[in-house]
Image (tube, rainbow, N blue to C red; front, side):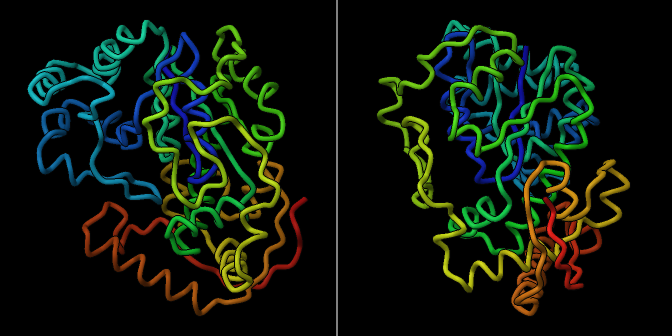
Length: 338
């Protein structure tokens, strides 16, 4: 069995990956940034020989987060460049490649199931489920205000972070019809981790082990996480006393609310990828979060949008100016989503 974890950034996915990696039947290494790229699933035979070249390093996602290149040579997985190149060229499909690629770390850990966590995996959930017969996907979500505030603390602009939250969730929700889709919320994970993880192990169809909540010795030398996080990803699951949004400066809060209220997924992307939600209100309704749209600082968000479009275009990302995945609408809305 194989499992992808995806969703917006700053939803606790790194903590979830670490906890699951303590289970004796599971293995999850460093983020690969590989299963988030559409050509991996739709055009494998053409791109497989280019993945380790400069052309492969420039390949980005089709979604909101560009995420160039991949991390297939990370030491967690134990492949040399020569070995990996031979494996890529000799694999007739991404399914065949993944089976061989993960066999080595699975044997090393004596595990049975591999898990790959990259938030932008959400862009390709449908492709993954279509090709991987025994594959499953886990969508992890968090309240939009707190998730975006956390991403802003990591250096993203409110515009980019809001786009990440709306787009990534809409992409993941396009696979929600499938019985192999499972959603976890950050809120339930920190409030009742045992119940949440018990449901997840039932979904994966493995036994539940309480030991997954206890840090392992080999985690001591791993980075504990990003400085702005309210928890250490290698520690125990804790419930923060205050939300990330609440402790943000008022000026930043106003930008976050404005960005979430104004962001729209471009109709071109809606049609091409089968998204059913186009804005924060609609995503919140699907996920059960409350959000009150309000336009407070439109000029700042518009400026951030222009910078973002310029950056995508200058760096030749797939989501450059003519193909930008997001837009803004500054119509003031006050009706909350409950």
